[in-house]
Length: 389
Length: 126
Image (tube, chains in turn cyan, green):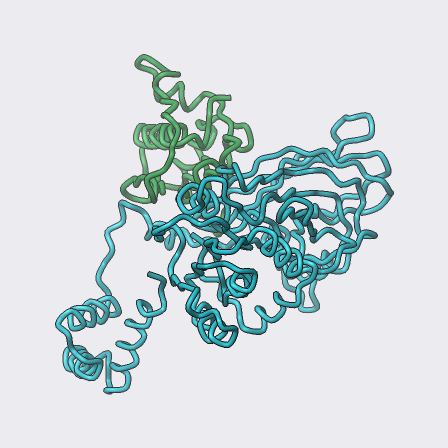
């Protein structure tokens, strides 16, 4: 599944104006859509691809999106004269079973790189269950690229507060968390310190594996400090229709992914950084790990192997994790009791007014007013009203 | 999630994981000296494991199957020893000095933890 994106209308406006992304997708749709065909818009957001598919002649469009933003689609469809051809499915695509399979599936569920949340599994499922034999998948293929990069200003702003401050405090324990977080970047070609290498090819027509584990060797092409590994993707939406978020290309909504190198290693031309880059999908989000070592030009190690990971950038609460264990026995707390009572009353067909009054009667010490009880009941039910499916 | 040795009841993975077939410690250390052999052996951290320590507790993530494991302070101390290339027995004297526990219990608990770490592909014999 792709989780509800939580983008704002402003974000969606930026996506509409994100070029060449938008025009490439539009052209790919124009070529793929034939009169009378069926299109699935996967992770449709507010449905701009659905509207374009109708404009290019689709007979039927299914827009699948768990986020409330999809509610904007039908007014837009009415304004564009195609509301009768669009079906909205406010859910995740893996819950959806079509009456007829689609001739075209279009999606753009990437983050700074194409490995984002359940993107790969979602497309693999859609390809297997929702796409007609011989159908078209847009996008077709992404290639991830990687290079050494300089980004001194941001590197300093991330690390300096933990190394020294004006108050005589030792904050160095925070440094490790600061340097183990991937960043969204918009770097220019002059920031690159090495040649570009391929990190992975994601062919959406065949891919099933969501995790990445690759080793690369990046050779410095100039002397100086290196601040991180920069990763981006070259997208092939359809044959001959491409765009990229590479340095030097027009800035796109995705940005690039920057993996900071702790210690700001200084390299001379010809020295290398060998790196093992891993992207592991854990609970719907990627954990990025990058183990790296500086190698002299003759191939001998210069310095220790350093393991970095976005996992090390998180402040975990062991107690919170234990609470997720299958061996954990949860204890009923007052908030759970409110929820339990609230849901039982819903099951009995009570109005929100009756639910609030009953909750207040039962828990007067915690819910000291009718408004407090009503707020709690609304919040409890709102969690269900806003979820997909 | 795994929580050991002094953290109470050991608990299993948070979710049914694709945990690899156990590399059972007993297959490496047959006979009556299982405990002492396991504690005197050298272990290395699996390439699949990455550990994050906050305060005196440690959370380990298995990168292959996305399962989290938790270690209490003494489990964390064992982990640091393994990471430094030390045999598990190296932490016994320090722990015995700090905790009210007899050597036999301590060694059995450490051995039990090592077995769980190995069976979950978090450590392996060096």
